[in-house]
Image (cartoon, rainbow, N blue to C red; front, side):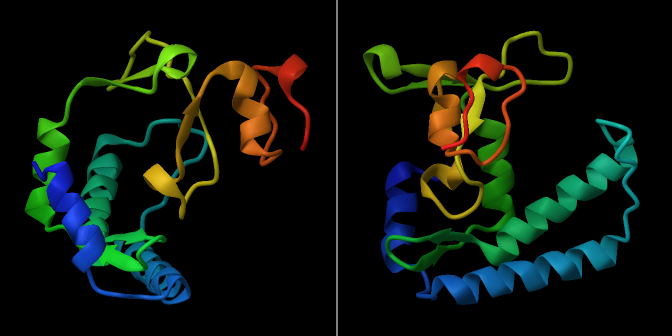
Length: 161
């Protein structure tokens, strides 16, 4: 698994790229991969058939290895090999805690049929710290999300900002 220090070094030494150029590369590659797979998803099914899920997983790994991750602060692309991505997926911690006091949150790996509450992840997907995910407690979900969408499980706490 890649160490935190190795990832930090890649943030400082990866190839320089402007965010618009990275976004364009991302979009073009996504279209290419989608056209190549020619998958027909049935949106009535929450979980796709195993063969489709496997194809999506393999394509996602190849996509991530080809595109990399963009660091908006350093304007650099962090590149990871397919093997590094697979190794990280298979050796990751099953549980970790972030924050302190009231802000402490334990993030757990989940699997199909897991009865453990998933928590709420708020924030814009894409280009922000931690992959655009901010883990937050329910009372802060809607103010944090900034009105990006409705929160049907918390109607009394949701209002557009």
